[in-house]
Image 1 (tube, rainbow, N blue to C red):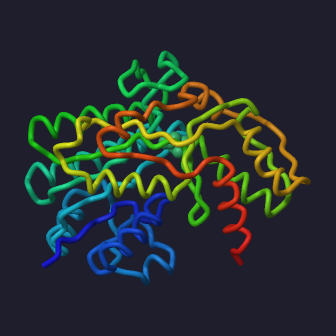
Image 2 (cartoon, rainbow, N blue to C red; image 1 turned 180 degrees about the vertical axis):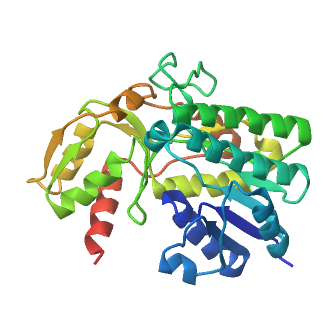
Length: 315
Ligand code: AKB
């Protein structure tokens, strides 16, 4: 019997697209979507779905046993902006969910894990441009602290218990199928929605805040490519830097204006500015390129084209 895949947090921005892609690749019945809330009709109807709290070890174990799960993608997390408002809830969700899957692998109940880290592991003392794989980290947000701790635990479980855990440090992700929730890079999705709905956007980051970003198709491709890579090629078991493009809010506005000349942008930075200021502007992902052949495909203008065309077709 073909072993199954479990996705925890399948309703989120990454989880929905990852679920659909894995179902297209491996067949719907072998990819079990789960989340603490019900998913969209599309996702619920396309294959098995379980209501599941990623912090509940026994509940995850039951699903793992029932479906003979082999691989787990842990996509449930509280992102940077929301985590600043609910620090303990963020810590509990981000860390306990990770321990649950690491311990299931340690007990040999599953054999492979994907867990996402983030550019948020870096901080004010990290080199901002072309941030190296190995650099001073010192994250200054609750989310970043949880991701850095998570990376240490992943590497520890790999070395100590031979747990096959794989991870990338996602930059800000841009997608049109599902909205992001509670991140600092969310402006780069909202801007396209507002451009089409009202023709203007009030950005919560300043015009010159340059951050690493990625179109969702690249992020999903990277995730699956890393999971399919031979274990012996993977030299990094904390988390790989993952790069694609970097831009400022003013540059996204320009790329939208090239297609929608009347689009207007205003700037009103809020508490998220401080978070963004502590993160890298661009990423050196040469280790991912060397170890598992990572190559991004989408630049800013290609992303803008995809976003405006696809969102424009939605009812
Ligand atoms: C966030 O903004 O919190 C996330 C991230 C960069 O990890 N998108």
